[in-house]
Length: 248
Image 1 (cartoon, rainbow, N blue to C red):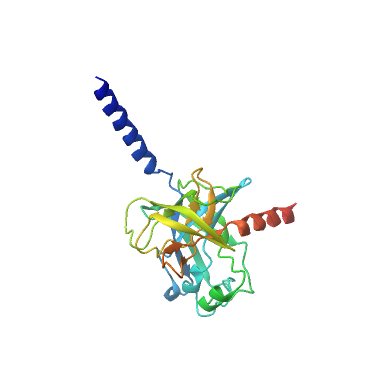
Image 2: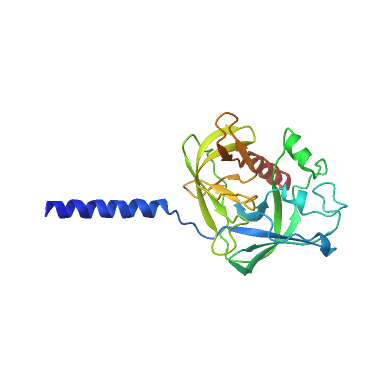
């Protein structure tokens, strides 16, 4: 009898641990369709994005470097030069659920939409912040974390890589490794072989709060270990503080 109870306890414990490992989050992430008045510049299914609740407002967030690829020949900065027809985010597993972007509120005419500028700029803030024109989705807006991750903290990345062709948003698992200025490195626990397409997707902590945005990769020069290297949210916090201060 004692042996039976011991086996039952071990089985239940193992089941609970497995369930805990399979973190489940509500639908929070979408993919981008960027459409221009001249359709030859359209880029569909490019990177990810998410909704962010701040105070009483909800905004749409994605990675700025996406428009290095998704731009017209005339675009030199994040000002769309009047060429943008529509920027839409939608659930990859249900395209009928979508959000259309309104005004880009952090446009920066000092940027250069080139990879060289992105890699060499001392302060490259890899965020686009849109007002929302219309929301036809059941996407759950996220909120910013008030605490930075620390060594060993479990973190999750929600979204789709380009290899994730269908199905619900993926939940990739990492641990916080180190901070490196505007970004931080995460050790891979459950991660795609190729993270292309996850740019702009949220990195959240175990409380479901945003701590970063997927922006690139990094590699240890000695061990050659590869890390996912998101941007810290410091820029978002400072931007919104100034944004609401100027609205008062």
